[in-house]
Length: 170
Image 1 (tube, rainbow, N blue to C red):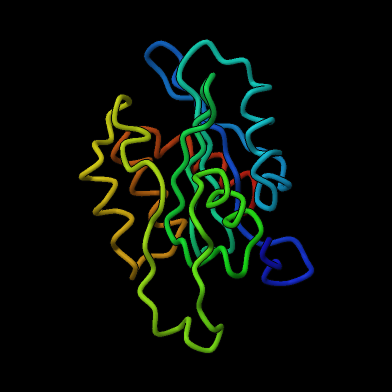
Image 2: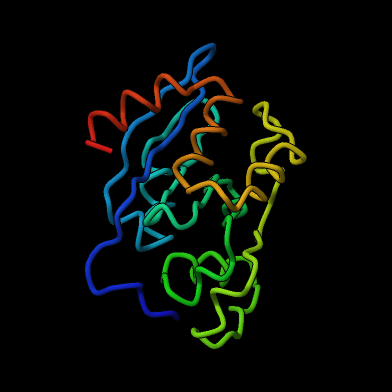
């Protein structure tokens, strides 16, 4: 497994998004979700939501992860596979996807274009087609929180997300 970018907890946020009948509900997850995929999945499963639930993780504004628990295993998307070189949680996602961690010299990493790994259609049944997710993930000029904001705006829970992020001081 990769070493984390630093010995301290990464900055960012982790939220659960639940579709309850006609409304979205966004709640914060514990910060441990930013460092451990199993913990993020556990927190999402513990919600016991009747509607569709998924997690959005912004790790250091460097990359984001979508986690959607399902009975046969979580559907996952990481916006930048190269993040697995520096962050355990990204390495956890690649491991769960059965994808090798990229083999790059850390000095060469700045010259490598990031790429996503996982299920671009992870939210398609909830209103975010894989083609739109591909455009969002492909815009590498945006920070992860901006990409998550685009997901929230497109799906209709931007206001709810904004309130939670304000409460978290983000």
